[in-house]
Amino acid sequence: MSESFPTDFVGLDSGRVSSILRTIEEGILLWNTDGYLMYANPAALVHFNDSEERSTGCHWSLLAQRCLSAEGLPCDGECFPLDRVLAGDANTRPVRLQVRSAEDQVRWLRVHTQPLTDIHGAVTGAVCSSVDVTRQVEQENSLKLQAHFDTLTGLPNRVLFSDRLDQALAHARRHRENLAVYMLDLDGFKIVNDSLGHPSGDQLLREVARRLHDSLRGDDTAARLGGDEFALLIGDLKTSGQCEQVVKRALDAVGAPYFIDGAEVRVTASIGVTLFPGDTMDPDQLLRHADQAMYKAKQAGKNRFSIFDPTLESRARANLGLIRKIEQALERQEFVLHYQPKVDCRAGRVVGLEALLRWNHPVLGQRMPGEFLPLIEHEDVIVSIGDWVIDEALREQARLRAAGHELTISVNIAARQLVRRQFAERLEAIVGEGCAGSVGRLEIEILESAALEDIGTVSGLIAGFQKRGIRFALDDFGTGYSSLVHLKRLAAGVLKIDQDFVRDMLDDPGDLAIVQGVVGLAAAFRRDVVAEGVEDMEHVRMLLSIGCDVMQGYGISRPLPVEAVEPWLRNFKPDPRWQAPLAEAARSGAALLPRTGRLR
Ligand code: C2E
Ligand code: MG
Ligand code: MG
Image: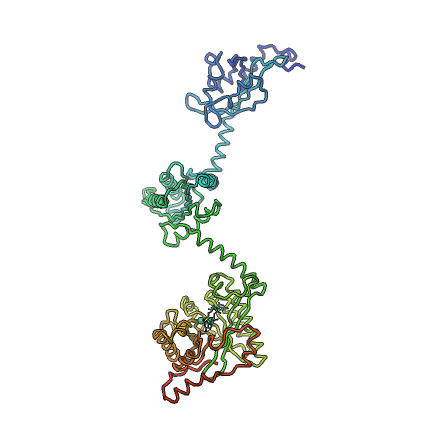
């Protein structure tokens, strides 16, 4: 079978072939082996913007000069492979070319060049077919544009911004450069949109986009991520000052007045910045961090910027890990309570136990509350811990009651738990259970400073529950604001003098004055008073002499593990030395301060 077109077989003569070639939409160009054009049909002349006179006999390289590659580069042997085809390469692929008309209009062609051979396979020339694909390319481009650019402002959208951020990060890593990601949110845009209408809002967004774009260097990117949220990507930062200059320019550009429909409109911007290196290499996280910083700028009063602090973030992440570990520790019952006795040294009897949390960490051993509670005080898990502490302390109280020890149990409660509705409900339930032993023998210790934070809620809570038998103590008293007005409002039945004052009162007259002051206040407001941090006999003596009888501290007993509590209580005997200062005072006739003496 012949490879050449069988004109004889279908009964066509060459005249008929040319007339067909004249009418088809495809362009056909025939070249001789030297690369000169032998024939071009009318469609090809249109495609290549050529005339018959000009094209006849022209060398392919002249035609190629009038074309550009798909990327818009001058055409070379790659995009117009006639030389290769004439050398016998029958496997070239169709290529896309651009041809620019005299009116500067671009026509896109799909051109396929193949060799013409005789019956022996020798190359006798080449044929190019061309198809006009302008409409298809325009459609593709417009789709690409929609996928990468924001239709309202023409700025890159989130997709393109992410692409560019990826590239910029790779570049910055390779060349050890700095880059900054800015997240910008308009302040007050909603008001403009709601009051002037959406078309005006759109106009404003377009103008903001233009100003942001104009405030940057050519290589940097301003993008609209959605709504009134924009992002900037600044590469090759040399100094931190440069980073702030960009912010300042952006703030000034956005903050300048706008004139929309004859009205002057003003908006400002809040900007969050994060820097690479320093922050993570993950592009999504960089954006998130810039976003977090932007919220900080908003919270700090808007029309300003805030720079993301990676050290804070890593601390927050570490806390997140800790929160999970603490939740697990609760489930695995790794928490235990130790109990520290409170003793009325004047009466020589134990009046209560304070439950103190310990974490028996499987690897690190026993961890004290000061090591982990401050890190989670704002987290919900502190509430779960508090619930567990109350339940466990009440269980231990019941066990001790069964063994013949009727004692008040104190638990420490975090501020976060205190103001939760569930906490009040929990106390209601305890009151409701009505086991006479519990009610009136549960005491809640709250930090004085925490009580002052939300004095309205806390004072109501305290007043309500104290009437029904649950007592409240203000812990570490003296370290908060300690105003008389506040003390009057907070009906807490007990003041616990902070151990720092007690410990140093023997050497520091200022601390002694504070301890005396608190004892006096307690008497005046008819509250009980407990001294914490009583480490030795001298403390006991001094406290008794100034009228504070109830004490807690290593000098009396360290916090005891649960199994040691009952034996300690059973073997408790008042220290005879406690009586000495009282006897001495009685002998010398010294007037002791009024007793409050309401502790059970
Ligand atoms: P706090 O309620 O003021 O408890 C007194 C702290 O002082 C305890 O430390 C206790 O062991 C220690 N202490 C007692 N006597 C002496 C003494 O004579 N000298 C010295 N240097 N220290 C003494 P701990 O157990 O480490 O607890 C520290 C703080 O952690 C507590 O202070 C309390 O605010 C908090 N805490 C303890 N358990 C819990 C709990 O279950 N929940 C909450 N929210 N906080 C708790
Ligand atoms: Mg306490
Ligand atoms: Mg305390």
